[in-house]
Amino acid sequence: MRRSVMVCRKCGTAMPDDAVFCMKCGEKLEEEKKCPNCGNSVPEGAKFCFMCGKKLPLALDASPASDFEYRKIDSGTVTIRKYKGTSDNVVVPDMIENAPVTKIGVDTFNGCAGVVTINLPQSVLEIGNSFCSGCESLTSINIPNGIMEIGDYAFYECIRLSSIIIPDTVAKIGNKAFYNCSNLVSIVIPEGLTEIGSDTFNGCERITNLRLPKNVRKIGVRAFSGCSRLESAIIPDGVKELGVGTFADCRQLRNVVLPDSLKKIFGGDLSQSAVFRGCENISVAYKGNIYDYEHIHDLYNAVNSSASDEENSETNG
Image (cartoon, one colour):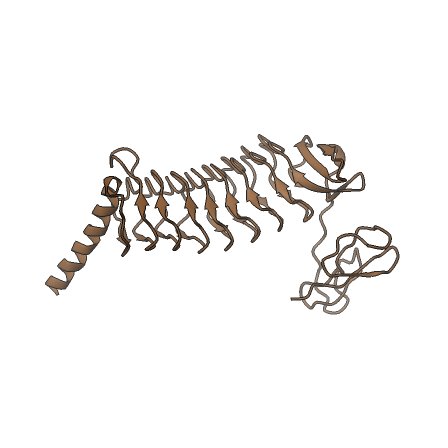
């Protein structure tokens, strides 16, 4: 779908749809503002649409540059290094010192217990490890398109975060990225995701259903351990092994679909850290050929228990 026409407000030159800066005078470009209800063009600052009369959403004012420790890079971009402001609602500016903000560094908001919302600009292309770790009051954040990876400990113990949309550009979610996000109910996982780290969603006890995108190839140990309300999980074709404790203590887990591509499942002692430890009511659908028999006690029991139930049902019928 074609985006709005980009026109430089300074010199009036028309630019390609995806342009960020004017190629003639260098001015930063902005999309033409439109009414979300009828699509009519509206002037900057308008509170109501002149065509349909609907109230327009107000643009958020960017937090002042003085609220951040930042570094201007030789390449002409800015990295935010630390938030030092006091506002509950943070709007990271897209430009500082006439340079685009492209990176949110490691630990930028780490431990900012009072921050409730964070708005990141579309100019951001990279976010560092632990950048929101321990933000216990955080309820809302947007992740811009262009981000390739959600780093380790990114939202570690953000206990009030209830929903998040991971953009299509993200290919990897790191270790403990959403560890103990105990109120996380809704998470949109992109189709391009290929890797989920260790303990990524460990302790996300309110997630109920899980359907991973078809491109996922690697799932780390204990990735979904402690998701105590998880009821069903579909593992995509292409995943070749499941790590220790992947679904341990998912006590409501009943239906699991495993792909034919799965060849190894590491469980070990059922009393310690098996893949399905603590999943008392599990039923597994699997038609493949596991060759690592030494470590599949829990899967064997789950599959055969399910098969026995079906046979008994047919016999009784």
